Length: 130
Image (cartoon, rainbow, N blue to C red):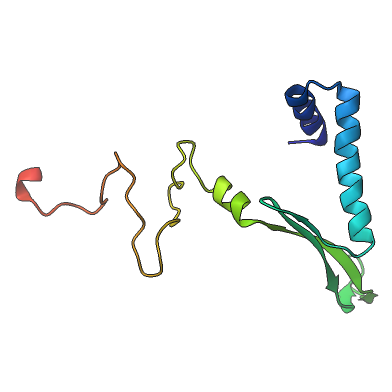
């Protein structure tokens, strides 16, 4: 999804003009950038949080010449998805955990069966089934 797609979606669901929707999307993004620039963290409940991480200075290498160079310390933005977002992404279209997900299973517990799916993919030992 691009920023233009996001503006289009906001416009569609809110019955606002594209110009107004673009202003809203730009304002949200700029607010996030400004807060990070001030060193603040942004927490959006149910979605995730944006934080800054400090990278220490290090020795790097110029790939063209092979010379060693000093890389200065810097701050980099980091996004940590919230539990609700992770759960929503890992759910199938029918609302059940997606295939391969172990959601709902405790430590040492087998994943729960989804109705209508085969209980096991292991070969049967029943000679009549062959």
